[in-house]
Structures are given as structure tokens and as C-alpha cells.
Image 1 (tube, rainbow, N blue to C red):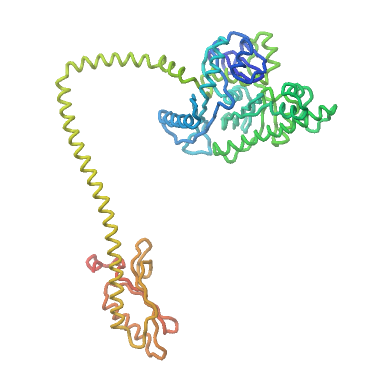
Image 2 (tube, rainbow, N blue to C red; image 1 turned 30 degrees about the vertical axis):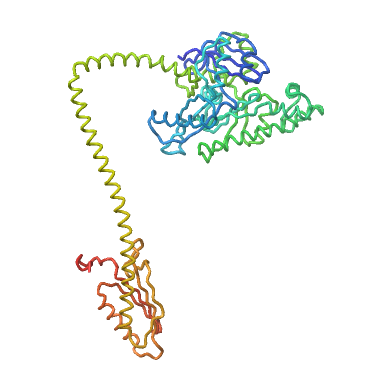
Length: 547
């Protein structure tokens, strides 16, 4: 059995209060109340009227511009390390925005598309917003349990009271100023988001079309506007209001579509496809809105009523009648109360920093201080009896610290010398290769001058570092290779024999060399590749390979 708590959803048109307790597999409502007003500011909305009943402990919903829901993919790490990662994330956001923020986080259910990583949902809210809600709550006679994003309250309303099947569902709570949206797959939360833009989009469009105030436009919306596809208008004013509302409906449709795209990019679920859309909130009551959105999204769109499965039998008759009138608007308040009352619910609990420190002190720091005092007394007594041992240990520590300093200095010098030796070895290798290349070329020129048969001349001579499989010079171990391109004078006899004799003299002069030569089909031309630096043959003994 859960604790009794009040879910509080403060809107810019109504304040909703749901009080009750989670029992068995449902939430039992004991009170419900609504305060109607037209105040956009949080502090003014709280002051618009007295609380409809004694609030007690409250879970208060957060939405709007001062609330930020972020997603971070992290490797699967221990809880203490995850808390540290999220603290860095919060500090970065606070530094960027220049505002003090409070936060809490929770892991999303494991996603099959993502292996070896977790997706963290991090919710942040400005401390100034929490202070406004806190002052209003105190003035109304309530005490704070925690703050939670309205989008996550919507998720709890779905998991506890929705008909959950193996499909992907988009749920949207359409308030006057804000839109809270979640995407769920079966019972699992994929994405939660709060957006600016609710039913006031329709009010603004109608106000502009008729040239009236927003308050008058809201009345015209409720009286005349319909988004029912193919509707027959009873008069020009209804057509005018409905066409204006249709333009705003397109904006709302775009917000929902962008939520799906944003989920794909943030959570990296590229194959996401929505099967159904559910609406709640005061803005969902606009005539024809579900069928209008269904036509635009290409999926069924229905109204979400969680009170069909919640237990309302204990409500006073007056509260039950009020709930029937405002049940679309009360979904978030129900989700807040359920989230706080059910210990197993998926929850985000944001509290002001001052409250968090006070709770940490009351919940654990007092006992930690007491334990520290006892430990200090015990250690003091022990130290008095072992002061001689302490002096001995200090002397040993001083000696070890001296050894450590000397070892660190030796290690530093060794590392510097190792790095310097590596640089010198690289330079020596390069110099040796260049010198070897030049010596090899010089020796080949000398041999050509001495042994090239009469009637032959050299057309091309080059030396370069390159690969040659025939010479067993593989990639990554390039060696200097001399390439000779020659030909015989026309009329020279026994060209092949003369060329073979020349190559044999070349092998005799350079017995360790690798030589490959290729005469042309006509026999008048030839090419010869040669290197003195080929790796030893596998069958050669080390002493022979080193010659």
C-alpha cells in the first residue's frame, strides 16, 4: 500500500489537485478539486484561489520553458559513477545557461537497438521556478514531496491505467501554453518532452482572424470552431473560426511529428513508427481534433481517459461531478499522485538544492556525524596508547618519501633518455638507409662501367625506396632498389648470351644481392632490378644472411 499524496498540476487556465493512495493494482482517489483562473504566471496561478481541500504532502508537476529534459547515452557503469557523470552534465548546463538548476535522472528501459549502453533521462529545472511553486504550495497549506516533469506524470498515468499492447503509442497532454508528449513502446518509455505551444495556438489564430482579444477568441473557439474533416458549417462565423483553427491545428500536427523525429535522433531508434496517438489535456476537447490529427498522421487518434480504471468510488459526490467535467485536464495530476504513491513507479524527483541538503542531513548526515564523533573518541584513546608507534611510523614514512622522490626522479630521467634514444634510432635508420642507397648506386655505376658488354648502353638508371615482390621486398619494409633500363645496338650478335654473361658478372661481384632482369620479346631491350638490402632468405643461415 502506497502513501497518501496529492498530485498538483498548475496550469495557466486551471489548477488540478488529485489526492489518493495506490492500493493493490490501482490508485484510489479520495479527493479531487479544480481552481479555474486566467493567470499565466506560476505565482499568480497559485494565488488565484484557495486549495479545494487540505493538500497535505504534494507531488508538483513541472513544464514549460524553465524545464529541460535531456537524453545521454552512457556505457553501463556503477551507480556512483553514473551519478558523477550526471553531475558533470548538470554543471555544464548550469554554466551554459547562467542559471542555478536542480535536477534528477533515471535510466530509460533497456532498448534492444542499443547494446552495451544505457540511455539516461536527465530532467533539469531552474531553481527560480521551484521557488515560485514552493512559495505557492506553502501558501496553500501543502508540503513538498518533490517536483516531477508533467511528461513523466503522463507516462505513469499510461502505465498504471492505459491499455498496454505491443505497439508504439504517442501520448500528448495539450495544455493552454504547453504540450507534454511521451512516446512508449509497450510499457517502455522511449522519449518524454515538454514543448511550448498548446491550445493557445488556436486562440491566437482565431483572435487574428476576427480581430478580437485572446479571451474573446477562446470563447469563440469553444462556441464555433471545429476541425472535423468535411464538417458542414452552420454559418460564416463558424466557417471562419474553423478555418483559423485549422491553421493552428497544422502547427500542432508539426509539433507531434517533430517529436517523433527528435526521438529518433536523440535516442537513436531509427526504425521508430507510431501506431496510435492518445490525447488529453484541456486542448484535446476541441471539436474534431482527434480525426483532424488522425488524417495528418495516418494513424488512429483517440482521447485518453485513465479514470475508467482508477478507483473513484471513494470520492465525494461533488468531487466526482467535478472530475467528470475536467477528467481530460486531470490526467497529469493523477499521474503525479500515482508516481509519488507507488514505490515501484518510474520516477524523477527534483527538489531545490536547499531541501535536498536538508533531507540528506536528516536522512543520513546526522547519523554519520554521530558515528564520526564516536570514531574520533575511540581513535583518540587508541592514539594516546600508541604514540611511540606513531613516531616510529612517521620516521619510516619520511624515509620512504625520500626514496620515492629519488625513484620518481630516476624514472623521469629514464623516460627522457628513452624518448631521446627513440628519436636518435629513427634518425640513424634514415641516415643508414640514405647512405646505403648512395653506396649501392655508386657500386652499380662502377660495375656498369667495367662489365657492360660492348654494343649495349643504358637508357635509364634510378634508385628509390619501393616494394618489389620478386626481390622479396614487402610493403612496410621498403628498401633502396636500383633499376637499370638498357638496350643493345642494332646488329649486335648473341644479345641473350651477352646479357646473361653480364648478369652473372653482376651476381659474382655482389653475391648477397637480389637481382631480377627481364629482356624484351625482341631481345634488344632489357630491364634489371637489384638491391643489396633484401631480407635474408628463409633457408639461409644467419651468418650468411648478414653478409
